[in-house]
Length: 202
Image 1 (spheres, rainbow, N blue to C red):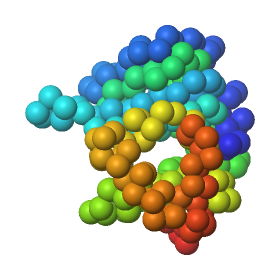
Image 2: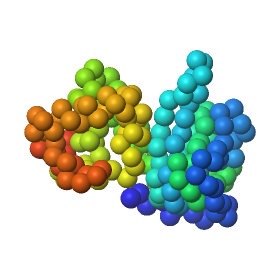
Image 3: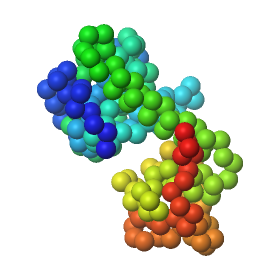
Image 4: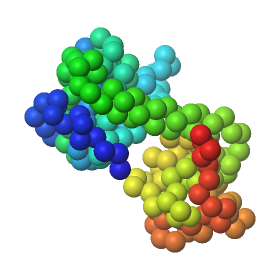
């Protein structure tokens, strides 16, 4: 879990939102980045054909919409997957802290670097052709040691790696038949090949 205490002094009072609530939409004025205190959030980018793609997921304790610190508008929609508690950290406050507070810039840069690494790993997974290979790489990326404990339904995992949930279920079944994963319980897996995944050496 990332240490985000350096952001807390600059945040507004916490707000609660119910599951399904939209916190902001693409094109709306930016208020700043968000500190997610509890619950889960999906960031969705609307496409020209009316569909949408998941560009990021956040779970407590985490941040999202960091790009809003340097943008006048948000570039995606933020939707609460569960009931959430969030604290907005105004963009002006973050920019002032970057310029004036010793150590703040280094911590903020380290936070963004970690997110870039995660995005690169996800891009590598999406570039894979086979559904089973995508599923195996994604599970390896989530693993703690050789074990994966999902914090969300398998159906949500499917959208994150560009598969239908039917294709994902078939891919998981194939991995199990091949001995590459073992189902321990609902949402829990053991990896036969260890915890390595895209970006592991980065």
